[in-house]
Length: 617
Image (cartoon, rainbow, N blue to C red; front, side, top):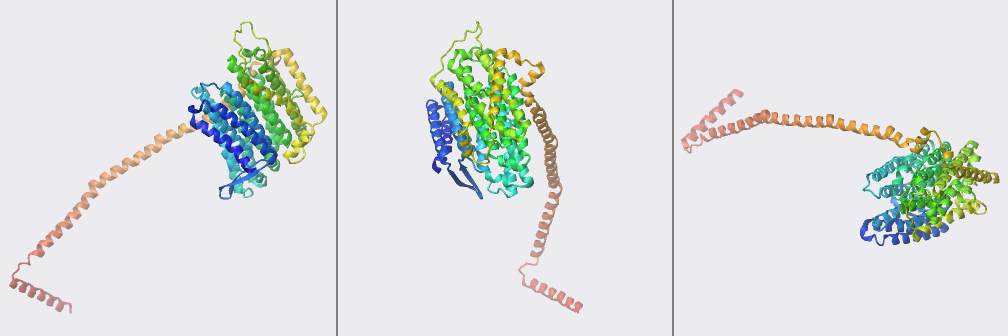
């Protein structure tokens, strides 16, 4: 079974790399190759979800690379591969032959493979590598139409925001090594750290998770990410990238509990995000922006569940949300392709034009609204039962977020089902079969997944996930949330968007995503840029001038040395040479070759020697 686990992560990564590297020559074969790879990966995911294999390979000294499938990662692997296969099948028709299809499908497979590695990683080094690949491929996919500067800027914003938060994982890894309690950097060993190191690890994990899952205050990057193709939004923002942070918090729920403060911080951040970003979704007039804000809000429920210890409810919410949100994004993409519109007023009658898209979008929207008997209704109550056991105020905040989700979902439905204006002469084109099949499949999943929130299926999921028993919701909780969702949805449907009229300033603030990006640029980006400019000026005016002054001083010193010291040295050398030549000339004079002169020289020398001896004595 270990071979199946290696194949699960290697298959999409290898196929995606080959398609992306080969490029345009493989455009013709890329769609079918990608869909076939995704279906094969789905089969492998189902197999390993039942067998729970574990593999390990050497990476660094004392830091092995580990992959494993347990209850949570098995459910995640099946969810990721199923949604990936549906989105890629939809993309066959949505990404036309004129596009760089090999690059697109290759990047999508790479992204899916990175997500599979993330959910099966058992150690922080492997998790970090997959986390980085996921961030890089998301940047490339959001900026897929890179010739458009606006899309490139959106990709940069999304990448830099999540990348800044990702530094928390590096901080957590460093703290884990320093603590000595998690020397192998195994995820299961992180709760063993104590003292200050435990606080640092918890803070780093929370920061990285909030950034990846677009929770407050990082939510604005998800708005910018809507510049990518619709299949990218459907995959990245339903079952993969944005839920990676929520998955990590659910996986490390024991760490949050052990820290003492991590659980409440995570739970309340999720609850506030569910409420605030839900209101942002209500204020949107663009369908994709509405869905993006609702993604932040819906993931807020998963984060709330992780903080409250309701791992079963958070997991069920994650799976149900993946089906509903990917379906909603795919339908929005189909309408954008066929009608050329994504603004809600321009989408009047869209559901009537394409009945398959209209009906399936209705299923997705009602699921997001929490209307019975669809899956998110029941899944949300399972996690809210954990919030209720933790704190009544937390439960009420979650329930308020659920009511708001019914408002924005019903608003979207109201627009797409309204009759089109008489002047609307856009032609209706039937949706391709490759588009309709994944829509119908995901719509069926939105309804079928409801059974997982009720016994005995819920008990089975709880046993598979392991851990402590989870609180079960009472019948009145199901009835209350369902009745509120139906009542609010009906009120919005009957009264229309006029019911949602708010003061202009509040609407403007919410429609601009609370101006979070503006705040981030004002508080972080602009000061950093100003600091960079100041350092550049310091470099030009101080450091450069200091270096140039030192160079000029060295040149002057060299010239002075050449002018002064060189003359002295040359004069000394020439003087020594001249003296040696003079001594040589004097030494040659006695050498005449005449014997009587040599005799006289010897007599004189001995006479001088005798005198010296007499004087010395």
